[in-house]
Length: 487
Image (tube, rainbow, N blue to C red; front, side, top):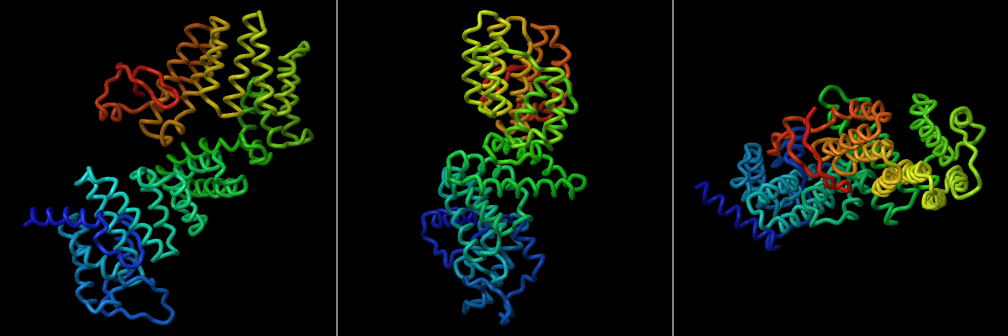
């Protein structure tokens, strides 16, 4: 009997994927957990339900709209019990009957659509050769649910999430972005936490391609970061795990907007960069970067923070340069004209006969790409030029290590194996820095001590069939072979 059910299950799936099964009025589906929570919050009995004048019921076909309402109600209750025990093959025919005739159930919940998504996600594992068609069906069910229950932001969030991660062949990034934006519009400050990371990535992409302007990007960025701040403040115990994963990804990904002129105000840069300056008040790299960013953020020269940084610069870092490209480069940098600064420092480096100056100018270009333009591959390219120009110098390798260690949000979700493997090549660079330049050892050891704890765990390495000491190639923009290590 079970075999017959499984065969029927597969046949019905193929028919629906081919467009044979009628869909009634548009509606949608999410997860079985969401379906269960809806049933727990409201009675599942529908055969005696009546619509009062003040009820806001779905306009889509409901139990009471059918002459076979009792049969549909029975099928609904029975298949829902089967869903709870994951008897999907047996649940499918009864679900199909309800879906075809009363997809809105009692008009108060989109459970039928959500259950359909669960059933088809199960089918995707049973029929992997039909994954694309199944993905189309799932997206259709979500779309139907959103039309039948237009006030439900959760469904749009789930549709976008599944489209982004599970069925990218069936959904474009613009479509996913629009779904997340719809969810945010409906849920506001209570937006679903699981969309924050993918929405952060899409925000950058949509702004970079011109799909949205600064005003909309700023509003959405503010909403995402505020939701993260609230989640971190309110979570407790293991409930903080997802928020910490978001914290490891979203803010770093949204740093892209620091390269957009006038996107953030002065206070953003004060809050973010002044603490590091105050921890390193004599570090000229930190001083220059902080001062440049305060100017970029339109902090006035009369602001106390700017004056504090300027005083530190005058005390520790002020250098008088001879007229020429290098001096012009610093002038451009002080005016936040990064393109000009890169051009002039590159010219100065190419024209320098002294190896120390050549390396210094190339490394300055690398730091501009890293700190101000967030272009990691170009930063590495110029750091390598600096290292080639001046042998036995560890600072370029220290910077490359920082580039790699900062790439977790670019190469993975911010936490987990794909993001943590970037620590391996970063440690390689820091070890190289102190091997070629003993004066860099203290700084290199500081970074190694800070980041070694973030390497993939022994369990993660073992589960992937890897062994400590073996060679591993880290992809993403890094593309470096390294050695597997664990904390």
